Structures are given as C-alpha cells and as structure tokens.
Amino acid sequence: MTQADGTGVRTLGARYQELLNRLIVGINVCVREVGSMLLLAGQVFYYGLRPPYRFAQIFLQMRLIGVQSLFIVVLTGIFTGMVFALQSGRAFRLFNAESLTGAVAGLSLARELAPVLTALMVTARAGSAMAAELGTMRVTQQVDALEAMAVHPVNYLVAPRVFATVLMLPLLAAIFNFVGALGTYVVGVMLLRIDEGIFLYNIRWYVDIEDLVQGFSKAICFGFVLAVVGCYKGLHATGGAKGVGIATTSAVVIASVAILVGDYFLTALLF
Amino acid sequence: MIRIENLYKSFGQLQVLKGINLEVPKGKITVIVGRSGQGKSVLLKHIIGLLKPDSGEIYVDDKLITRMSANELNRVRRRCGMLFQDAALFDSMDVFDNVSFPLVEHTALDEEEIAARVARTLALVDLYNVESKWPAELSGGMKKRVGLARALVLEPEIMLYDEPTTGLDPITSAQINQLIIDTQRRLQMTALVISHDMTSTRQVADQVVMLHAGEIVEAGDVDSFFNSNEPAVLQFLKGEAQGPLGESERNHAS
Ligand SMILES: Nc1ncnc2c1ncn2[C@@H]1O[C@H](COP(=O)(O)OP(=O)(O)OP(=O)(O)O)[C@@H](O)[C@H]1O
Ligand SMILES: [Mg+2]
Image 1 (cartoon, protein in one colour):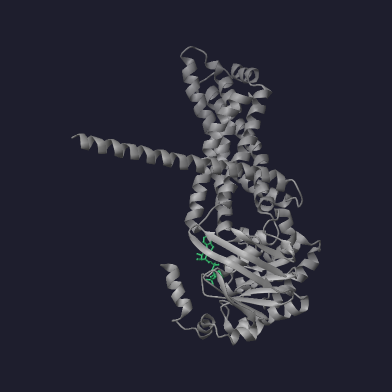
Image 2: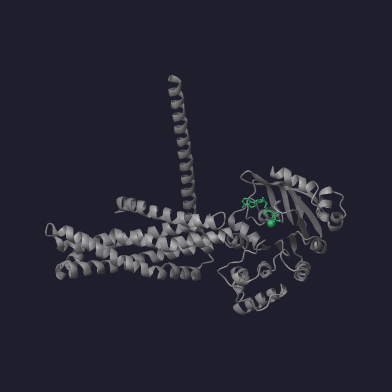
C-alpha cells in the first residue's frame, strides 16, 4: 500500500519534471524564434535602405499584395459594417439611442476593425503567399543561388515585400473603413430607419482625424509584422513540400496572433 | 587560389566533413570525385560561403572567407560563378531573365549588350531560341545548361561546377567538358569541378581529389591519380562493388 503510493508520487514527480522540461524547451525555441524575427526586421532596414534599390520589385509586390487583396477587403469591409450596424442598432434601440449607431460603428471601424481585419485578410492572402513562395525558393536552393550570385536575399526578396505591405496596408484599411461605413449607412438608415441627418452628423461629430490616424498607424505596424513573419517563415523553411506547407501555416498563425495581441498593446500604450 | 584548412562540418548527428585540407591552385582545373553522399556538394557550398563550417578556415586568394561580413563576402562572390547540382534556376523568371540576372545585378551594360551576351553564352552551352521559355518547360539537361550559362555569363575568375555533365548525353557531355577547358584557358580561370564521370575527369582535370567519408583519401595530378595504387582509388576507378569504399559505407551507416 505505502509502496504503491511511493511509486505513484515518483511517477507524478517525473511527469511534472518532464512537463517542466518541455515547457523550458518550448520557451527557449520561442525566444530564439522571436529573436531571429527581430533580427530579420532589423536587416530589412539595413539591407533594404541601401542600394541597389528594388523599385520594380516593390511595385510588383504592391500590385500582388494591394490590388489583388482589394476584392476581399471590400467584401469583408461591407459585411463587417453591416453586421456591426445591425447589432449595435438593435442594442441602442433598447434605450432609444439608435442615432448613435453611426458614430459607434465609425469609431470602431476607424480604430480597430479596419486595421485589424484588413491585416488579417492580407495575412491570409499575401502573408501566406510570401511564406510559400520564399519557402519554395529556399528548399529548391534558389535562395542559395541568389546568395551565390552576390545578391542579398533580404535586399532582393524580403525588403520589397515588407515595404510594399507597409505601403499598401493603410490604403487597404482606408478602403475597408470607407466601405464599412457605407455598410453601416445602408443597414442603419435604410433598414433600421435611423434618421439620415442625425446618423451622418453623429459620425462627423464623434469620429476625429485622430481616430483615423490611430487606425492607419496600426495598419502600418501590422503590415510590417505580417510581412516580416511571412518572409521569415519562408526563408527558414526546411524539407521539401511538407516543410513549405508547415512554414505557410505557421506564418499565418503567428502573424494573426501577433496582430491581435499587438493590437491590444498598441492601443494600451500609444493611444 | 583556394585554400581549405581543417574543415569540419556536421548536420545534427551526421558528421559530413571531418578535417578537409585542400589547395585548389590558381588557373587550374581541380576535379573532386567520390561516391554519392560523401560531402562533395557540402564542400563546394562552403567555398562560396553558403554553409558555415563548424571549425576550420577557407581562404580565397589569401582572404579568409569563413569569418567575413555579408558585404565583404559578396565582394568575393562577385568574382565566382557556381553551377548547382540541380541547376537552381529561378522558376519565376524565364531563361533570359535567369541568364541575364548576374549582368543586370553587377554590370552597367545596356539592354542590347545584355541580350547579346545572353545569346552568346547560351550558344556556348548549345542552346538556341530558349530565351522566352520557363524553367518548368525545360528538360533536366537543358536546365543544367541554362544554369551553366548563368554561372558563366559574368566570366568569373573562379568557377565551381557541381556535376556539370551528370544527366547529359555523351555528346553534350563532351561539349560541356570542352567548354570547361576552353573557358578555363581563355579566362585563366580557377575551376573546381565535382564529377562522377571518369572519362570527363581524365579529359578536363589538372588535379584530382578524392573525397570519402568526409576525408580526402587521395589528391594529386591527373596522371598520378589514374595510376594510383591506393585501394580506394582503384576500387573507384574500376567501379567494383566490393572494396574499402563499400565497406566504410556500411560502417558509416551502422
Ligand atoms: N542541408 C543539409 N542538412 C542536413 N544534411 C545535409 C545537408 N546537406 C547535405 N547533407 C548531408 O550531407 C551528406 C553529404 O551530402 P552532399 O550533398 O555533399 O553529397 P555529395 O557528395 O554531393 O553526393 P552526390 O554525389 O550524390 O551529389 C549527405 O549525407 C547529406 O544527407
Ligand atoms: Mg552533390
């Protein structure tokens, strides 16, 4: 009886120990990974802001990232605005304040929804593509070939993608913002029959330029993060098609989490 | 001249290079032979700085490249050309953009001159009217020759060829061998060639080095290599299944 208890305690101790070990290894890997990503972020400025400047590459990436994300951004923007108006309009109606619907939706869109949701959509659309493309280049030795020809991969591959994303994301967020507001207007004024004059007046009264600036600053940060993460995961892909798949998935997961967590801290610290 | 001193490299548990010492003389063709999976490509990638050794040094013209900054290393790389074993063409670019890439990056030539140089270099590897094809549309041997053209287009001082004739028919192989010899003579190039092909080794080599199990088992000029009494070399030359190379491969695996 006592003997059985003794072994029970021991195995529990051993298991606890093993769990602890795994946790330590996990944290170690995490810290190292974040460190390497920060290093890459630094290299983007070091190698990206010196000649040769890759304007052609930047424009190409702007087209891939910006123009091709336009449709999903418009689509998600409209529906986000519409559902937001629907929900908040109903809630405000409970205490006869539905005229505030436009203002609340406008504020939320400008500060949070436009930058965050745009960044998430672009992560899914373009961040994943960066990881897959650079990952394929890595595992088929095209990155090695680039280096062997004395071209730095950060200068040629990473920096143009990061710069293009940082340039395009605020624009896409602005579009999201606009069509989102349009969506709120459609639902608020046409469906919930809120008075048009008051609806618009409240949007203008409550939504300041500062709210827009806050949203755009966030969009710039998120764009930087999602592009760096996508490129990092691609450049560090190993082991064939499966490795590229893993790199792509983890790029999307890490970037999305970083955007949502970063959003809180940006809001709390800066605004 | 390339000098390699005490080079060690492991991938995880797998020790690939175990103390390589080698001098590649300037203006000569050195051929590295050895069985598959013995670290020949890994050695080549160290010379151009794509892999960092665990320990040991590599000098290119008395400059220590194993501890250089990225910018210094790129200055050395600009004088080198490398043909990858599986060509490593940029698959998002057509053949023209692949071959012209080094010219666009590192010279100030205008478009006309670049087009002329690309066509001339492709003709050297016996390719015509392929400029607008994509790498995916090429055969394995054509890819290899496009890779060769891309490596040669800048007329580098140092050329690293990873199996330039593997996968080519005998006639094209002979042409490529002749090309290696001709360019080396014309440009006084230092060339390092990895090869499995004993006929072409005899044809192109000034010096032959044999790599096995991460060590150099024989190094010397062509004649002394092909007349060597070293059992490993004899087995390799005769292509026998039994012998010191086969045995150590088994030991290696266990
Ligand atoms: N990036 C890498 N990661 C892990 N192991 C590697 C890596 N590159 C090479 N190896 C291992 O190193 C050993 C030597 O590989 P290498 O490519 O140099 O062989 P090789 O002599 O060129 O053979 P082959 O004639 O078939 O091309 C192999 O066992 C290979 O599995
Ligand atoms: Mg090889």
